[in-house]
Image (cartoon, rainbow, N blue to C red; front, side, top):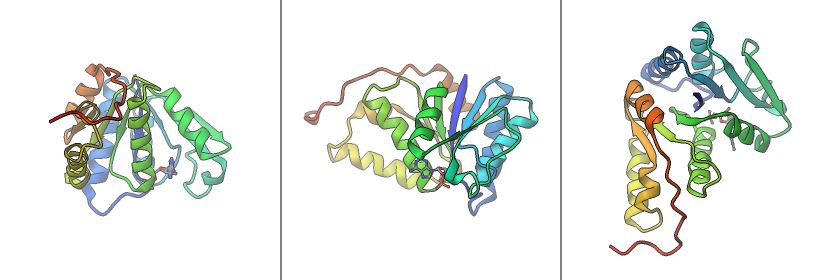
Length: 192
Ligand code: AMP
């Protein structure tokens, strides 16, 4: 499987973010998965790519020309695709991957996670999407998603379609066995 990993261009403040991100890269390599990611050499992005390259795994980076300098495009990858803009980047990452996992990150990571999830909700792809909640980083977001269901804006089905785990091996088990079922988004909320 080729797994697209969305993650921060920084390391974050707790050592666990970097440690567990590297552990995910190692476990993916061990299970024979390839990596698709944003192509940068900084933060968690660079660390996961290095971990997988070190294990001899195929790594595909996709970076827009305008960011190649800022995010220090990784020069050691199996393939580095330079796109004209961010839209092409996201489309290229989505097309190349069989599944998606978000690690801790900032606004860019949030946007990528929710795009993969909303495109699945709309039936544009049927690939599993996972969130690795390292050291409770995403506790607030997970809680807020529950609020969005209670408030009637997100259906139970689409909420449950996001695979959430705090464990590297467990999230990979779930991603490998997930069956994405397309349920059209209903604009009328379910009756409680
Ligand atoms: P961040 O989580 O903000 O550190 O960003 C992680 C990655 O997401 C970086 O490679 C950013 O270039 C990328 N990114 C930032 N903004 C966007 C966006 N609007 N769409 C897609 N990727 C983005």
